[in-house]
Length: 438
Image (tube, rainbow, N blue to C red; front, side, top):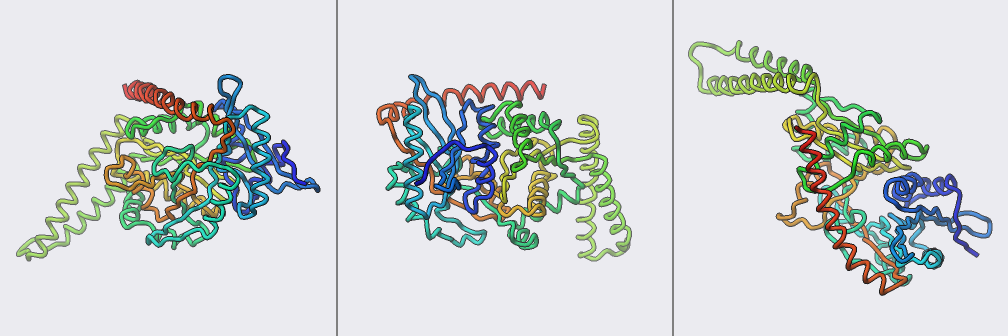
């Protein structure tokens, strides 16, 4: 006889982090505690246990209170269960819905990261052989599928890019696009630095997030949100949040450029002065143009040094580690010196970092399914694609409707309200960005 029960936090997290197929940071103790602190949600750590008191499935359920003593529950990337075991999934669903009914829930939402299909860097399709059977199992459990959305309409992205870090680093780099390799090499040649930051660097990270949001017209969170996220995930032995900072140290970069300038001058000095051949003239013109460009670059960096001091952080990325996976959760970038490609160098360094730590899956946490040329997020997709990961499509969201009338009102009115809030937040963020730049 299986029963659903509240379990000790440590016991719950140990089960989730070690689950062979469905371990995910959004089902972790850390995410539950963070959601409680910053998202006004109530976490419940539930385990399905057998007669020997062994946990066979589990889920983090986040409760959102609604007016009239109602609520709804959300299991982000849950349940943590073997979805190929139909009876187990049925039992888990039945028990969770019973729990939700006792709390006056309108519905229960799940969005398990069950892969529908994926495409590798060569665009070769790999279909999940268990997908259709699992899809039918969830339908049989009376979950309502919310459709195969193409953008960011759902609670979590339905598409992402994932890099298999069990491959050799050489093979991983071979899958990078040609331009990505070139840009990483150029960034390294300019002596850009990528360092691991600490909690004291959160304000700088937040500043870059604001610049990115203003530039790309999306809304994120306040500084305390990131501060709390960093604290919570680094306060649990099973999870970790790491800040990667991509910097330009002006003196180092100018020294690198001066070395390049010396090399060009040396090449010019050995060219014959008299009776230049056509090919030699062409070579001289090329070298002269390169020399002029480098001199201009050095002068530019001198001006930046006067304005910003000895160094500037151009990229700041937050990586979440949990179990054998890592996610690029947030990435903020400055709007100057993009020609240094510090963003590419930063990505490269945290891919290597995760590989060296024994992480198996590196998830870029979200892209789009609508690849039409007028999609404003196509640039984000193309950037992530350049790192050669598998383009993964998940099964999507499912709702178990408990109170149909309340559910209808919620799904019709709440999106309108959220749109109003988003528009207001955009104005607030733009005001913050303007203040920070003044």
